[in-house]
Image (tube, rainbow, N blue to C red; front, side):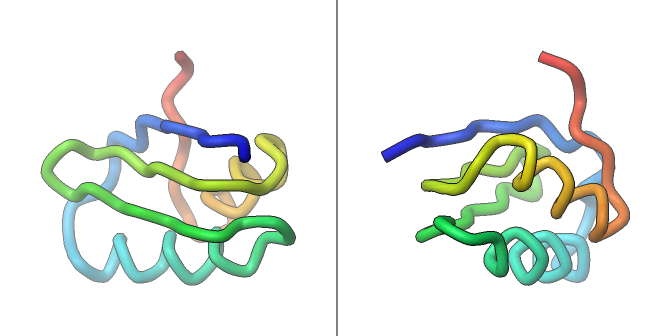
Length: 66
């Protein structure tokens, strides 16, 4: 299974967490989404990278370049 660890610097609250989890959780192939508010990161198990990044963008957040 593919695991994506992404930096999302604009995460600041539980509302952000819920928005990202809902959007990314709807991506085909995603089995788990863990949002770390303090670490400003998102770990995603499964799903295509581009689709995961697009879902985060659709939720209103930018993924930091790696």
